[in-house]
Length: 532
Image (cartoon, rainbow, N blue to C red; front, top):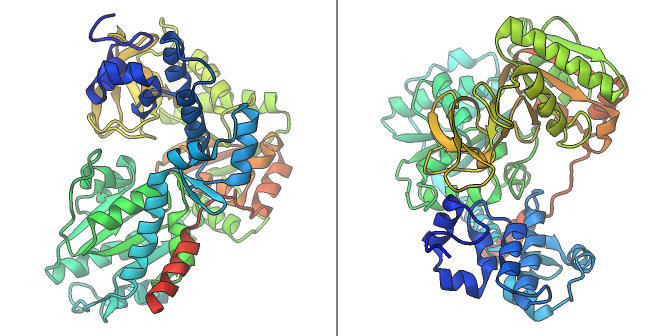
């Protein structure tokens, strides 16, 4: 065995693993490799098999149990109910070992937590309750004329809330066109006039870049501002302004609150969008706990200015069944999924010719109109190339955070150079990708084609022109907030392709996909403890 390689891993993954563990530690328990970015249970299991570890070994059982809980978290849950856990364990033919469960997880009544998520949930609850007891001094009314915002009393009330003794945390929410950007700029002007320092942050690079462009002040990704992956930076600024808070999951909320422990925090976002991809529903829980003043902007100030997309997004959000269609917001009715796919490719070709780009959003990965099939066809049609998988000109999306290169999960870009086979990672290439605000050399290990992306994956990004697929084949996913989120990603032209029944179902369906989380419960419990 080469001292630089682990059997079954290429050079890059071996380097990652050996930077964290010794070869002796890996041989003793190959499943610790699951703690290394890019190594799945399946891969660790294959390596364990090569090392002669049997299927019924306690190390394998422990790792598989952990995988079950991790998989649950990947669907947005902070814990796995005990009953559900028992069902999944039985399916994997795992014995129910209470000692092993207690050793690997935190058990809280009927809930099984990964220890760090249990800690985060408790910390966030305790810190929010602590912050609810803090009153911050008022800012002086300078730098901003309230007359400029007299037409919208909610915008005015938001600014005025800073001119009196106010809460340590303040929340601003509203849909597209309601003026979140406008009042954020006014708040920044107010802070600047008062000589108060502040820090602007957003969950993704795209969102941070957009925040900087519209406010005229620097904005950073939360990850960069807090020093990911070590998360060792503390925030000294008296005020922190966070945009796109609906994308903030529980771990990120924990890191924000911990790093900005002595700061006032302004959370801004659209509460009606889909919840974060990661575990928890922090923004909704923050609003639902009612500990902090929340301003909800309701008036669409883009109405009458040719923004049919914003108009219809608001109509969808209130459950209006009658939408207004024009050249910028169209509905092409097709029921058959195969015909939908054909039409989507045809429309994509036209958008590419006219605008130089396009984006397809769909609810799911699978099915004939899921991202996997659509990207295969888009690859063949728009950039067949000479290589089997990735070529210059391919549209790609990053699937994992890469702190070294400062590129993050959800970044979209185009491959501008292919150097060929990755040095040691089987089946992957070394490529250079233009992500818009950063050009970097990386491996295709964490890239997939990005002509078609799920709505969840596309949160925090925007497209100028694109297509949204709505089909009855996606019945389970057809919800109002999914449609609303998809629509609000569009800036110039939005084409909806699908059947009318699916559109009606999506607008009518206010059901939220259930997320297992106890943050609200813990906040209530912490309030009771504090009062007693």
